[in-house]
Image 1 (tube, each protein chain N blue to C red):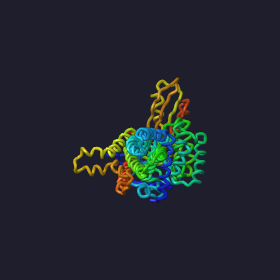
Image 2: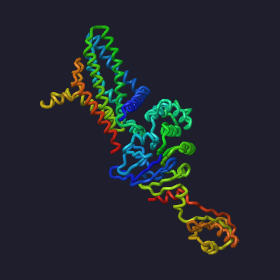
Image 3: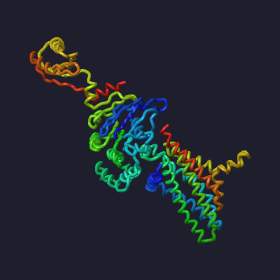
Image 4: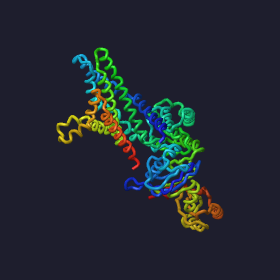
Length: 314
Length: 241
């Protein structure tokens, strides 16, 4: 159930919301659509789900084109729109039944699906309550249940965890992980840890264009600048800038050194080394040779957060 | 377009909207207010004027419709736009025509139910005196058609905005306009009077209410209704522009 997006462009009036976006989502993948607010995530999702047509470009869902086979595409997709709109005056069961019947599900399947969604999404205790009375976490679960009531092969989730408290976020993430096993999932978010926690692949968008595409690991690798090693060492010297600094600078592969000050005789340094190198061993040998007491030796990994900042900085 | 599937989809929406009318106070308020107003004048006609006819009712109901119909149609689409649920609805495997028809039929059915309850007044008169059934059948038929046109106009107004108050006012203004057309004939140039009169809802209604169902009058109502619903579908499709 693959999604193929080709050269998608969308104008709102004069303003270009997305600009020539192309990407693929393979069957069974969970893809995170990451970007700052206003980057074009929601617009792309609205186009994939046939809410509105693109200005240019095409999307195929399982080989069905969104323009020519809109109904087929919509039948295959489960969609949780941004801000999770719901009919607040309906109760949970009524609402899920309504959604299911609009998908043309027959009675027997509906009954089975309803029971299974209530079970999986943990809605048993609130199933006869009006949606308007539910907490935000429960509302989000109702939104997810609604998106999956017809057992779609593709799930499009626009900011599924926005506005939830940390516990609820973990719950919803687990739910998506669990449900996403058998489905193709595209979820958008501007929260980085979310992508790392749930997604197999990340597509980073900024100002309507894709700036990176790969697994979280690949992106960290690719966008890592120099290696950063932080050390803290204790020794009696008059001036660390004269007695320690040049010796660290002289180590092979070290590109630059920053002095971070001292605290009770413990001096902190940040060493930037060439990309892909590992200088920890040499730092240790140097310390032994100079009789420095090494209190700390840490390799800082480039986080996805740094990748994100680097890519989306204006 | 698969006809049976369309019918099922429309039925699903009608059922949901009717449930929403009856779950909230809307349906009951409409029914009670309607019956109370009509009942008051009906009783006046019966006891004070001593007449055994529903003529007064058929003159009064169109005026009550002016307020009641925009009130029940105002939220149909505007609320979905406001809350964003329109995005849920339009990304389901439905076509826009089905959405508009479902909403329209639900509101029309509510008016139908209300009209059905006024039959109580008919029966009180029928048991008390002789009543000419021709105008009664014609009158009810005409009211139903008139309500259809008003509901369609209300649906269109509701599709234009995400604000229910604006939807009500716009709906009311247009319904009022069609109602007033044949009452301002004195003020329009002579050449236009026949056109204005032909466009007026009341003119065709009074023809039917006389008990003579002419296909031209029915056609007028149905084409106005169809055209307005068509405009509503276009308005719903504005999101795609």
